[in-house]
Length: 307
Image (cartoon, rainbow, N blue to C red):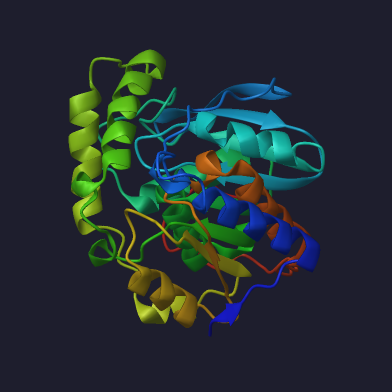
């Protein structure tokens, strides 16, 4: 069931006015949704390092204190992309970021990439950091990982903010036609070469991720209908990567889910308009009631046991 999200009127009208004003700039100005602002830096962490998880080393950093929130980045990216959001959240929450396996500073092994495997990596990191349950904020592949966790391990999530996810490969547009994505992929190569412990292996890494994208995820209507974790399905009105029909499909099938479409931004909304994106996340975290703790179901796979 899909229901519209209503923010506090003052914040909502203010942000809409800013978006409309940006859209009304002179013709020479580049629309916000066609920009790719620089990758932010992360603030100083309270704790950071590498967690040994299922044969790889997962890089992580933690900030602030409070209820646990985990930020999961998109494919080919790294945790630095969350720099703006960490600063917005760290005064009120314990914020954890991580580089997915093979991304950023994390290592990988010969295991084929898959969302189930990367979801298990999140569980492994949570176990290592002794986080029993957390709210997940995910972007793109990170949002898909969040949905995978909500389906298979709902006892470890309190709520899920899934931005720019797709439920199956048919939900993805041809991003080769997007100038913004072309710039992002070129940037991803440079960042991989700078951060990765295997800096010369980007082409092999890209080939493996691309193979995963061609066949995964594949969340059925029945699986989506079984999600009990409080969830918002979020996208941008100018998303270059995700078909709106797929966004609506997920929102329609996740019981009680919220649907939010951010204005005048794209797949990179959190960079293009951090204030808008951060307000949406803050509203979600403050207003959406957490799922009640429940006994862990028998695992469908074999992640590390909860602490």
